[in-house]
Image (tube, rainbow over all chains, first blue to last red):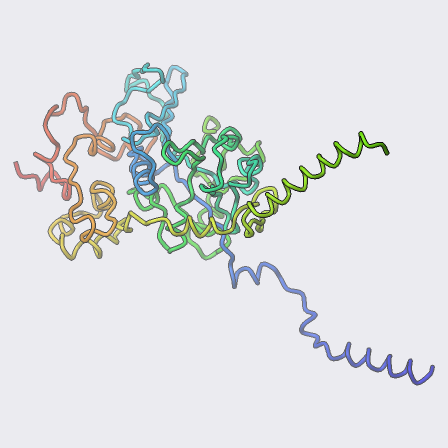
Length: 257
Length: 164
């Protein structure tokens, strides 16, 4: 060993020893996240609590500049009625903008189905909205990069960049997108991004008198709604599509898709 | 290679260069992907700010918060509300978004229509839904043509307190 090699080796050993042992400790990612939770918005719908009043639809349209009379809506409420003689009916007149003011089922094309009150076996309401999927097919198909999932988990549409081709409207398996009749672009639920980033609940959540709609940061395990999602028996819609929806539902049946 | 190859090829290459040049100036510089990668989140970053800056219309009167924000001027109506009955309904559900009320708009609409009440109080025989807890009427038989608020006080709907 010559003097050059000896000095080199000494420097390497001293430099290595200078690294404090504590910096080599492995971090538990769970612990780090619990202290500094990131933001990932998720939605919870409790179908047991929904009575079909449609205040959420009205609030959403007024908050987000969706024309009331247009037959499009960012959120809607579906009514499921199972009769004792073995039939199933689903309707959502005008997306339940006026709630469900009549017991008869809207079959579409101006047809209605009267159901005797004695014949109703099971019946319930399911509010629907964009699921803000973790692998959203709608953003995949956009040819111009106008729709995207942002780092907080919200799927948004860039109105100045959208060319209105409608691919995303076709791609969404949940029918959560539509063509905005005024702005002439694809439009969808934004989870009221302008409200949740200011600490306000989305308009539909605020409008729901029964607490059927809730929003949470699913990365914050101290959030009471996150705890509900983690502890209740929640379901998601159309799991087989592999879209990994971030809207969770309490009280689904197989017919709710 | 011969001239008949080079000449059309140069046109094609010039076209590609022109398109790339146009794209370079046309596409905003802040285009990029986020946490979810190129497939799901390739977008113009400034758009997120634009969504954040949309105007807020509903002023968070849900739950019990309306007691704080609306009570100052509308003490009588707020005090009459019962927590277990119509107290759960946000003021703005019936009166519309407050925006900057009382500055702009100065007054909020008072909707006296039957439709507003029938959202919840249409009789639907759905015993498996929470709808069963809400008293319902048949709109065609229960005093058709008259406004609900002629008899019922929407802020305090208790039948015992009803004044005819």
